[in-house]
Image 1 (tube, rainbow, N blue to C red):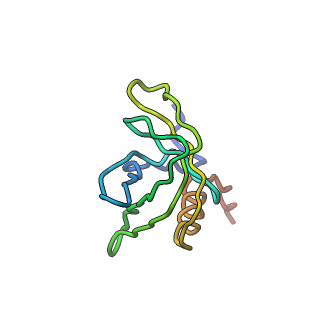
Image 2 (image 1 turned 135 degrees about the vertical axis):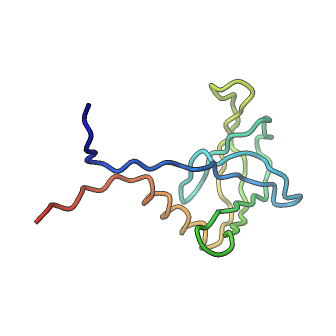
Length: 119
């Protein structure tokens, strides 16, 4: 069995929960993000065409968690391949600068970079 890894593996220790920005109740998990939108994985179907206040609570290694509140419109919702789960696509209508920082951090975390060559 091959024992040396050329690419470091990254484990996602927990899902990024998304909360309702009005009542702070969990609404689902972040499926993916971009500058203009996001996909949410939820246990309930979400209303298409509705505007949502969303609250992302980003855990931090040190210090307090980062809170990112944004506004988004649900463009579509369909059943996920996982039973009793739904995928919903959102267009972000307003987001603070921290949302862009989150996207950049996730890109870095899930990207593969070549290992530096040994001297």
